[in-house]
Image (cartoon, rainbow over all chains, first blue to last red; front, side, top):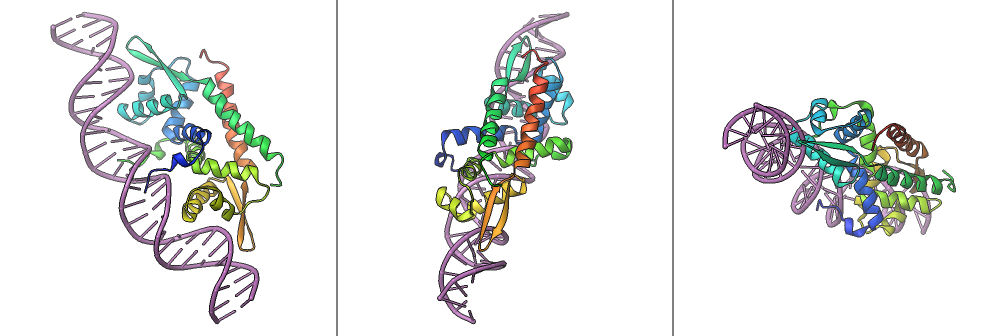
Length: 107
Length: 107
DNA sequence: TTTGTTTATCGTAATATTGCAATATAATAA
DNA sequence: TTATTATATTGCAATATTACGATAAACAAA
């Protein structure tokens, strides 16, 4: 095989795995890092910042956007991308749940 | 190509991406979920719990272990796997940093 | 209109991941 | 010793991801 058996798992498990997958590549972490250091941001800035070709960065941005980790608004010719705080909340809540359940554990 | 250009990014960016990658598959999320619902845990339990073959689960456990998300201690013939709270801390701290930097943002 | 600027998409090669049957290993029990 | 039990490893096929050149699309400026 090779395809992951996602239908065997719950919707919640697939959703959170999809969020983590979007963050599972150093280029996408670097994009998020960069978005956090600048006030406004356009894709071109990222192309100059990272050692990857423009189509590659566009592809990574698309994956972050599909996962709702960033959102982009059109500003004339450019696109202003920024972090979506709601999705950050969602991931933080997941860890809050883990932390809560860990409290009652031996290890 | 196809190999990710990890050498182009910082050690920190690669480290956090590796943690997220370990959590980027629904089966591994399900394993973490299951470890949080039982007090002690052995691999065989997980094989009975998830709709995947034993070698597949063993492989997923190995990836979680390599990423330090779980740790396993030998208990006779079986292995007792449990969550590593230190790694959960590490990921939570990363989101703490994101949250902190988001505070000073427009969006 | 044409030109330039910015971002997206297509096509494809290289590489990585997923899943499992078969088999191996390690420890215990008989 | 020979089972038995629990987990790991090997090998391979199917699929997914990554990266980028070429090209397209969308829009502004001249």
